Length: 111
Image (cartoon, rainbow, N blue to C red; front, side):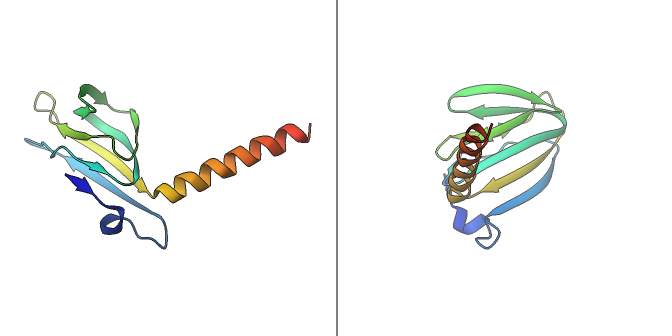
């Protein structure tokens, strides 16, 4: 299943965030999207299935998901989980990379 930025992300702010308490028998559908996503595990543990591998995530783990990475979640040993999710446009990612690259060149030339 593909998720589209146009249905989730406000183009005027180029991003979307959400805080999700994941409880009980949670399992999300395997999906990918045309935007970037970062999520932070704020509390608990969860199984993250990404690109054919399963990773156990716990409090403090920070994950970066690229467009076309295929992923979903499933509950780990009946434990609850809370996560902070931030999604942003591919254009925003490109702009940040250009800004950081230009900043590193500027810094190197002015030493």
